[in-house]
Length: 163
Image (cartoon, rainbow, N blue to C red; front, side, top):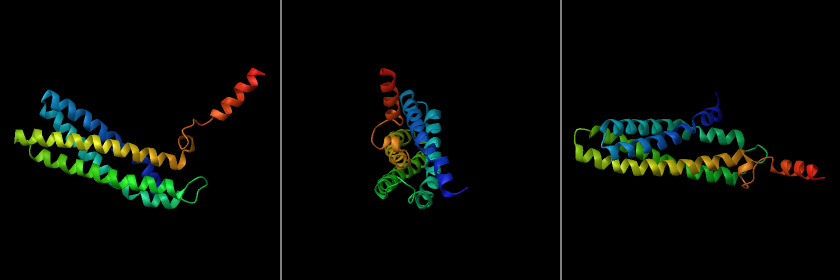
């Protein structure tokens, strides 16, 4: 397996773990259910851990795709810049999640830290979603201009039907 295969195979997992962790955490906080809160914290730690190979295979992936037709350095640069921000946020969410798990016996601190983690998980989801979007633009030209792939072909078919 090369860097691009690893990068592509894993890149959406942390995104969805951040989202799932945030949702489960919010529900746990509303219900005052420490078991749900702990589950969410473990999801966020997992998301942070899985972000590490995604982040560090990005450079190898860049080396494989930068010379391909339609790939521009500016798109790669935007994706890379956003990836650095998203990486920092999800790692912070993971570290805070782990610290919060160690405070489970101190209820007031556990709940307060859980709220901080909720904010970080939502921020990491947003940053990672933007990173994924920018990464998708590198190879998926249909999302670069906001048009749907095949729309020109569909237009031509419709014009023939009208004749």
